[in-house]
Length: 306
Image 1: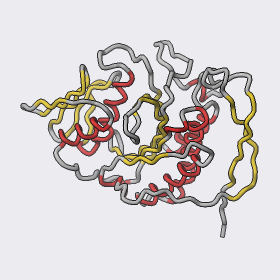
Image 2: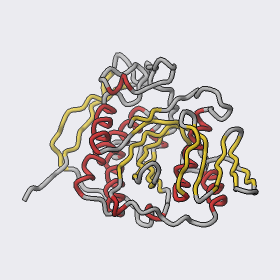
Image 3: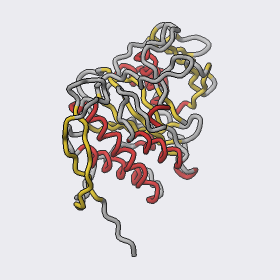
Image 4: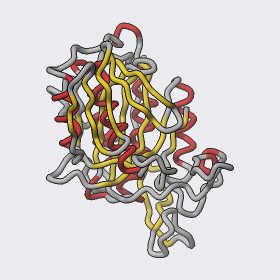
């Protein structure tokens, strides 16, 4: 029998000659391995009901416990969805890296973990780590002028890059599992106000037995409006041959033929199943924060790495 234990990395803080976020006051963590058994932690995820279309969120503590709490969330979510135990280790490694980045390089007082299911283009579990520090892009640009994560993945992060070389590990593990990852501007889910910030996400493909779409909870226009208003987006519903939910100039969702249709920059008209209301509203929040509602080029580009 093989017994696995997890070692905790202890950070030693010291002055850095440069900063990952462009600030001269920033301090970087250098890590040394210390063989300490980590006490198992349990996340309070009971009742999250992800399989029924819930959009769950958990706060992260603003200190070194953030990574352990994030790992506990992942273990609980994977257990709730009955995902194979062998898939949880890589997911815990990824979420640990993202949570550490959020509290070390971002805004530690606002860090959160989010989880929800989506089914377009294929069934997947979406896991995100949010913090309220602004996302300014990588400092690198492709020929079209859009920020890309190339510098981080190749091991040469720009001076204002988010998370440094740790995202190389995220990229490798996510790709190995057949998922994708990225960074995008969004709004906070917990707390009294949906303050803007950024989310770093990764997806976990779902096996067929776990991939059944949940029933749609209640009338769709009301569900879309409820999710949007919780994120600070006002909406207007137009009734006619088809129902259209407007979220501002150029941002709309068309409810037609048992599907949700919306136009996304660079992707054209995208057809989502009715069960993907959370994902559709997340796209609306993202577009609103990117500043693309008027059709102009994004002022805060996102990353999506497949």
